[in-house]
Structures are given as structure tokens and as C-alpha cells.
Image 1: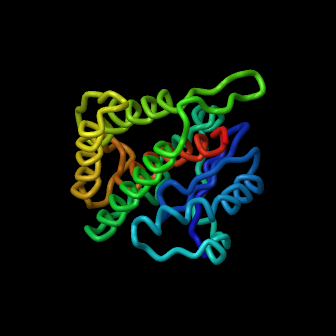
Image 2: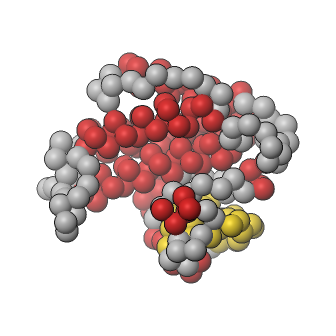
Length: 218
């Protein structure tokens, strides 16, 4: 069974797989959140495959809820934003390596999706939604300006089409995940524990990769 924690706000609940960064979906309640998580198992399976890790989508739709956390305004807005207690536990070096490898796999999937998408994406019913390049710019900007500082990094946002600078940014984040303090943490420690950082980064990257896929005009 796959360990899952639930982050419940007033209007939205996120279900997040503990050991699989990026596999995190939301619904109006716990049941819908878990249904959404299960529905995305096949799409998420590309990530562990990219990372060279064993993953069975059919088996992994059986969930074991190991923690529930109270959400916040971010939760209801549509962003998982609460660090669960399980992310504060001691992290071994092999576990840190695995987290970094999965984060790198999420980036690889994102890049592949972007490369196969047209510049203009299908709009929503009211004409909303960013096009491809603006989504890319948003993703790398969030990593540089919001996520990297949570890992103790100070980075400048690269241009969305500067592949070399983007690769350098990702390498710095990966290295931070691999070498972050591995001892047990407390809620008062600054920044994000590496488990949570990898999960949050993976969720954001994949959420937008899947958005691009769903809005690609064929």
C-alpha cells in the first residue's frame, strides 16, 4: 500500500503520496482527493520510470492514510502548503539521493512535455490560461524566487529559454536536496525539510506539465 497524508482546508483537500514527490492531487473532500490521486497513478508512473525506480500504478492505488494535517488559505487556493510531521523525521543519505533523483525526473518529464507542445495552448471556457512559454517562465520563476530560498539558496531567475541557466538552477536545487541537514527537524527550523521541498517542487512541476498536456491543441 502507498502511504498518503491528507491536507484538509475548508474547501479543498490534498492527498499526497509520502514517498513519491509530485504525486499529489486535490478534491473537495478526502474521498475525492484520494480518487483523483488514484486516477493520476498512470500519469505519474512516467516519473519513477524516468528515475529508474520500480513503481506499479495498479498496486499503488491502495492507500494507507498515515497523517492528516490542517490546511490553510493556500490549501483552499489550490496549493499544498503545510509541512506534515512525517517530513520532519531524520533523512538518510540514500533517501536524500532518491528525493533528488525523483525531482530531476519531474523536470525531465516537464521538459519533454514542453518540447512537444505548441506555443499557444487551448483556452478555458472563459478564454483563461497561460500559454506554454508563460507556464515555463512561471515554473522556473517559482523555483528560483520561492522554493530555492526555502533550501537556503539565493538564485536569480533565468530566462525561460536559457537552457544552460535553467540546468544550473536545477543542479543547485538537486544538490541542496542531496546535502540538506539529514537529522530530525522541528517546526521552528527555518526553510523546508528536504522531503517537503522535493514534494512541493515535484507537485508544481507535474501539475503544470499535466496542464500543458491537457491544453495542447492537436
